[in-house]
Length: 305
Image (cartoon, rainbow, N blue to C red; front, side):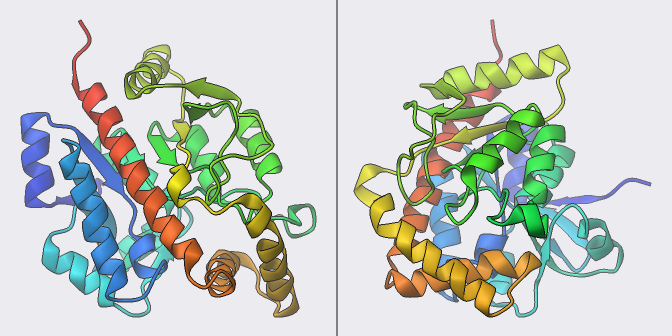
């Protein structure tokens, strides 16, 4: 049995021409912000990829079909849909098998990109080890996916609501290269830097593409996490954010929020407590990641001499 992939006309043409393609997730559309802002941001991110010279492939499961790239009508319909499943490795196959509709998280988007032969994926921030994981065992499937699926993922680090130090430890244990672009400090999602030192540093898309090729040539499983700091002009200083994150986490605990509900609850609560500044920063970092991902995909599309 093979899983049929449904390519958009734009992505199908890019594949035929050997052009650079960047995968994009769809949970940012269905679970990240309200309509019509979600549709507008998704369109904007796709345009950022195109403006940088690559082709965007927003990924989602629609009526049981795994779509690699959405046309304008599909994107708009998804942006307005209700009750869309949030898909990761554990439930993606069930959604497809039962004809369901679901938006892809980092892990699910990596799986789909791997099936489609797409090597680069741009997102906002990866999931990771939640605070209190020593009791809850709440660790995102994104980390294990990075260890086994050969896709280079461009993110602004791990989401700042997580235990970032433990997240980096798990990634190291799993053999995932964590590469920060242009600085030695690991970025903190809404903030450009953190007290944590990045395990690795590279300064250009060409270097990142070369590292990706080298891993493939060595037969190493898994991908790379590229930590791309949010532009300084768009960041929220960590000194401002830390007490807000702590309050949001205390609220989540008080309301008994667990499992998949934790991240969306915290992001919404932080949005409220920052009076929308967190969402503005989130949009800026996603767009910044899309532009870098396009540069990396273009570098990979160039055949080495």
